[in-house]
Amino acid sequence: MPLTGRWTLTRYLIEQRRRYPQASGELNALILDVSLACKALARIVSRGPLGAAMPAGGEINVQGEVQKPLDVLSNEVFVRMNEWNGHLGGMASEEMEQPSQIPASYPRGKYLLVFDPLDGSSNIDVNVSVGSIFSILRAPASVVESGRDVTEADFLQPGATQVAAGYAIYGPAAQLVLTVGDGVAVFTLDPDLAEFVLTQANVRVPVDTQEFAINSSNARFWEPPVKRYVDECLAGKPGPRGKDFNMRWIASMVAEAHRILMRGGVFLYPRDTKDPSKPGRLRLLYEANPIGFVMEQAGGRASTGRQPMLGVLPTGLHQRIGLVFGSKNEVERIERYHREPPANEAPAPLFATRSLFRD
Ligand SMILES: O=P(O)(O)OC[C@H]1O[C@](O)(COP(=O)(O)O)[C@@H](O)[C@@H]1O
Ligand SMILES: [Mg+2]
Ligand SMILES: [Mg+2]
Image 1 (cartoon, helix red, strand yellow):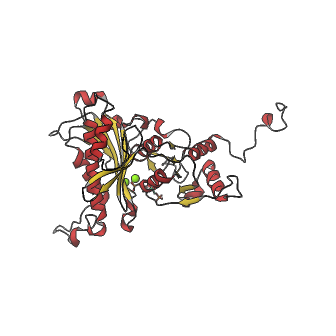
Image 2 (cartoon, rainbow, N blue to C red):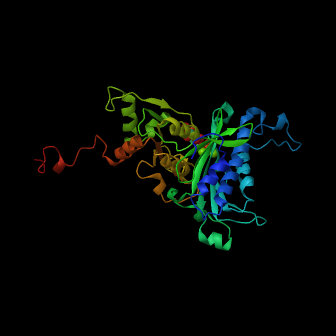
Image 3 (tube, helix red, strand yellow):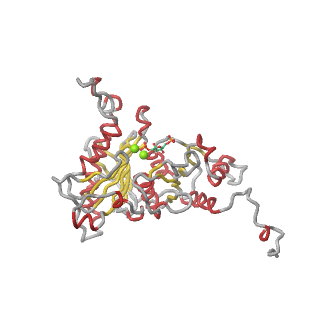
């Protein structure tokens, strides 16, 4: 397969489909509609304060209404671009408390679409990269066979069952990053053609890194394994890691994920003690799982710290979870720190250095 050149997303998907002669092409068609939503949002986001996030042209209508915030608008773009195509049994998103049903006037299909329509939206006002994250699951047989409405339970599938996932980043260039379970490909939006063009195939995340990303204003709430990991990074060359680390925090996970995909690194938004009702900040179904699938398909790793992210059985549509992803060796180290007892915990006397069982 040629690595780059003028392969559009459509051409890439056609080639992928050749691997499955029995495939109907529905997944491809769905991904193209998702990409259309991303193109529309790239356009909207690129207009910044001139665009729809602000009161239209500075105008306020007679009822005193201003246009909807960009989060809500992005959600609508995703829903409207995908509800009619006949490939979906239903959708769920960060912006909708309940799953969105496919209107009765449209056909229903065999996939479920889950998305964060605008990730990092707190950055929009300061013109920092934001993005959209998506995950495609199979609809349960009972949905496909009966065409019934979807329920929350239909979406509660582990990340390992994702059929496809990815994200779009709206940065200096708009890019779409996609996995259909056969590696990760990056497409860049050609503004002249209005097409996503393949610019990197088979992206690999370097297994080692000297760069980590964490919101250190939460340091006092971190659990001991995370504190140990960060302390060791900060100790640099004279410390236990024997090398200096660099730190980044954009507060836009899509942008952090993209940097890590391109040049390695590790991202942590771990479970902490800040708010006991929230076991983590990020959402499992439409943030952690799709990013986790991309990372694993690129040779990286994604974890809760305690278990592989893609193995977690979801319990709620908007479930939050601790998330660690990026360069494989670094994520594995963090997982090991979660398994090891804290350094200040004395070993049980029988197994201590001068114990009965030591020779
Ligand atoms: O403000 P904090 O705590 O650093 O959180 C930043 C995190 O919040 C998020 O913006 C959450 O995403 P949303 O903008 O979709 O709510 C992540 O992208 C980012 O990693
Ligand atoms: Mg988000
Ligand atoms: Mg969001």
